[in-house]
Length: 123
Length: 262
Ligand SMILES: [Zn+2]
Image (tube, rainbow over all chains, first blue to last red; front, side):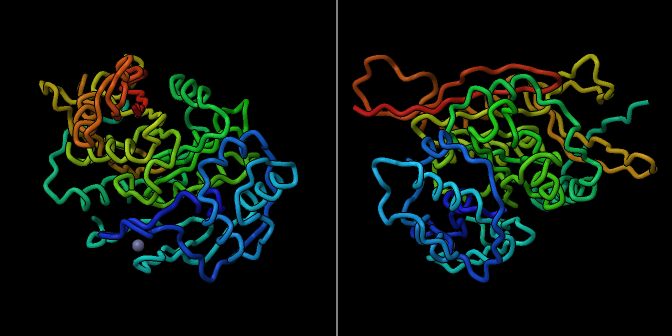
């Protein structure tokens, strides 16, 4: 399952790929929306760890434009609801994630991203 | 009679050996690995209960994902992502327990580093590192955990199989005079209702061996060991051993990372 909460933490780790290796770009993404339990306290705690630009851009790629371009200093209910939806309810079931630096492809199948490298790609 | 545990010698490259004697075995026995096979060990439950709301963590070697939904009384307060090398086990982990929401799982290697550095607040690695066949690889696995959590407050819990077995365990161990180096063994898994036996590789840890790995991994990363000294005038990074011990045939160690800035 790749939701944007997970995607926001992932980086490419192919041999020699140590900068500009994040965020991975989705291609041919098949998306499913599934409702998830809202937890405002979790979101407040998770906020400082988010790479905001990556999240906003990736959500846009997947057709969601509800997040503001800058992370707001004060959070209100509407913002948290939108953030919850983007992080927790958009599931990428199939597709590919591509490294912006080395173009390594990481396939997603059955909701599971494959981050394994071949022997020769391991640093 | 309980199946016998036998000593093994590794005479192949590490990755090839682990592929054959660990990953392929788990992929084959995955359907028989029920998600309710274990109650969580008390120390693991306590550790996850103590994690503050809003933290994200990594379960490195999640298997069938039995820890991803803990703590059960605070659903959604913390978010644990499962990583494993067995796709078939991950299919179970994804929806562990039919009444549970779908979990986040990633197919990956515990020696890989497919995360932003230091992005997790906590990490657990339960019954996983003992499937690596060399001391160097086991140390590298601990190193990855230290790199994957926040240098400021990251917390880590590691469990591995111990040579010191629970008296209630029905497993019969090979006689051994090995000191601090541990023991490489094959542990049979008998498929219920069939004659089929799968042997999984384990490194059984000797007393003190796990903490030794932690000390080596920390030294490799240039981390101080212990708690930050009071009134320090230096900036530094370190890792504190919060507790270590033995629980039901396993050794565990709990770590806390810290950084002082002056
Ligand atoms: Zn890359």
